[in-house]
Image 1 (cartoon, helix red, strand yellow):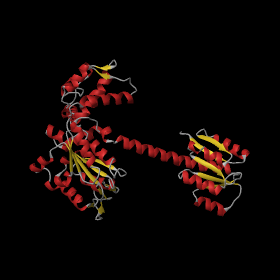
Image 2: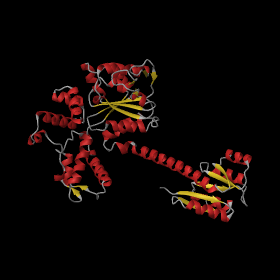
Image 3: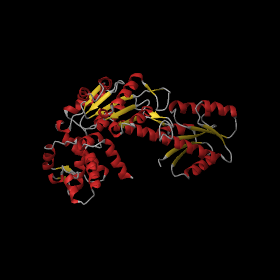
Length: 447
């Protein structure tokens, strides 16, 4: 527990020592005693967390000293201790900023402990919140979350900065593994809406028959299985940002409903006639060319232009010049830090091998390759032999095991899901099976 510093200002030395002894029984309290207002004020540079102040000091009037304290340290909790009960004086002191007013008596120590404990809990909570806010702000500094020094990434940073000053929609494109959701989060947590929620929805992972209820919510009894009211993603993102990942996979019927919500800024839950106003910023991401999808008739043109807003294209890692080694060194540093490993370097051979690879899985793949290399390496350098570009189990390996046809099918589907980052629609197209088949196979495995 963090130390809580308490100043006791009391001219009665015996009473002051008693307070000091009783409060110091709590090992989290650091107590310092002052017998005059003057000595107390000279020690304020030590930044106490709490002050008990005798109302009748020989060198200072209690009212005036309280005003001086609150003027210089307005957030400092000051508790007044007096030998006499005087309601009018207590009211005036509380108006002037005193945290509480206690009268000396048999139960003073108990009451004082309760007050200080409550104040300490509140102060420590406020400090924790402030620390988390600072960490969050630091975490989402653009250059901290999206690493890279290349000209291509500098352009991305510039566009991200432009996205902070308005509510304009943001459309993020790029191959799988380039960090589209990270960009959306960084924009949200640096924007005026950072105090609101960031709600991410992977459109491709939601069956078409369920996506409307997921987005808009539903009332109890609106359909079989609706046992209670449930709010949707639009309500959940109120005042913040709604991030729709893989928007190119959205069903055409749902596209129509989404367009209406964006135009009218209102919606209704399934099973309800009540109109709900919505206020959330929309960001979308896709690894498809939406304009091509529009020409194919797979995506509504009016919705496309509604969502386009500020387009940000994340370059694949193979187009980011020197960023491969820059990122690799970053991942090495982080992995060693988290796992308490000694610092390691890349050998010349390892650097050459990394630079000659195209990274179809982009930054996500590089991170996995580096972490595996760190585990495999045996000295202070990562050697060329530690770099493996085939860490995933291939299909050929499946035939080394004896399984049923059903088990083989499941393993093949799981392999493709891993390869394509759980993009169910892409996997269904690659394997020429229905998305519902994949959902059913994965559900049967859980059961």
